[in-house]
Length: 92
Image (cartoon, rainbow, N blue to C red; front, side):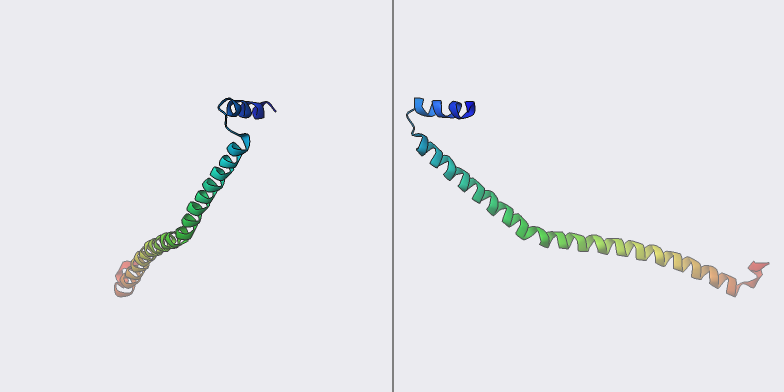
């Protein structure tokens, strides 16, 4: 009740009607909430597109790096196999 008294007293001192004050504050709140809703919707609208693009790029980078590592390991194993096949003297 004290908060309501603190709000109403300055309104009556300045001669503003309480109903006019409340209707203008409600209108301001509705405008603000609509503006926030609109900003949020535009953010939601564009975020999935950029997020999907980002995830795709990250997946490609991870795939290419793991593929290059496995290719290098495979090359090393095949080189060792060729050495063993072509140079039987290395077994001695």
